[in-house]
Image (cartoon, rainbow, N blue to C red; front, top):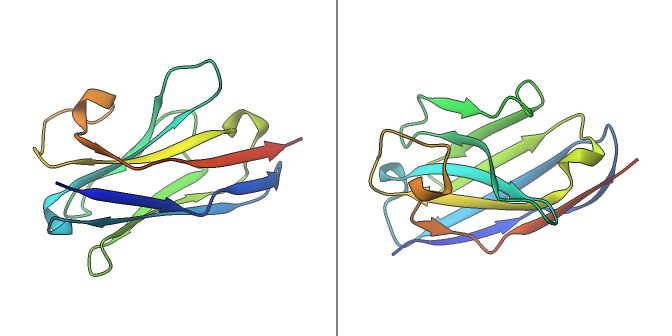
Length: 125
């Protein structure tokens, strides 16, 4: 069992930056691949990016590549999502997710077994 708690959401203006945090408990953090997803009103939850359990591999959705950065601090059991140059289209509830099975795929919600409660990010134009 893995518990995930996100923080850091809020209301920002277009072009601003924001950093989300997700702290995990219940399992040794360096055995867990961590992902970020988001869900806008009326839309399906979509992949934002992920970072492998060792931190060696990071993947991003095309829509955020070059603007968002995922990092993790295994000593603090925390993964971060640094978001720069935010756009109104980035407005969504952001979720962190944990994959304990180390599957070969990483961009589907089905690849993750545990989810945080979500944190709202609103970007005004």
